[in-house]
Image (tube, rainbow, N blue to C red; front, side, top):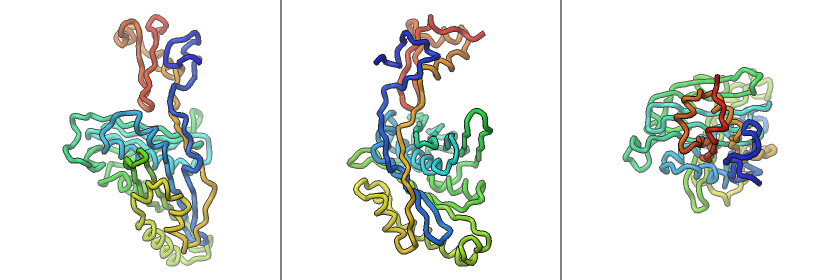
Length: 318
């Protein structure tokens, strides 16, 4: 097999081979659940070894890597609500040392992400908070339904000390559905791990849908939140604690019902064809400026793999 990062006999615009990146799938990465006869549903996300494969593509400080791990787990969990072919992305852009944070996941569970960091501006604290890393800016949640459909995007100001609180601010201001998330990411004895617990309150029309009064629905939701709030980062990140066991610990007395788990996989979608398409939009002067020793190297921001293009083979845009 030829190396897709290097020039070959196949025209660049036709070469869609994936770069040499880890081929990792976590079969039970997302475990959906609901509480029987109660207005509560949720998802438990466990990235397992996929977290380490994604997060170690770049040499970021531990605080930045943990923040990206949380974003990846959150994107994976929220993408599981997609009912069509597309993707869900979370993007944070601010004036802090982490100028850009991006994680996205397709409806099939292909996950990727990256953080653009200015190391010289990082706080001296050993574990700076998410708001200290991101600074002032915005958080965008985007549903992409493909080229032929309009994107849906919700944007809120970055508000809160951590990504879970920022997401809560988004739900409170941009969504009709009451939701709460718990996020964890850390380097463990098994490598980097990341996890998320997402709870949503199912809308009930005056109790008709569930046979509960509005007061009973509120009480069920409050109880679920109180139980979920007892979860620890150690439990979320423990590979030896099966997702089913963890959810049983939390909700066994509340009519826990598990749904079919969903897989997550290493999901960088770069290729020579895509990057060649980007280069095709530059004029001759720009291409000449980018070239070194007769070649242009483009590096994918997600998987950190560089693709080499011979300058002589690149046509300039008109």
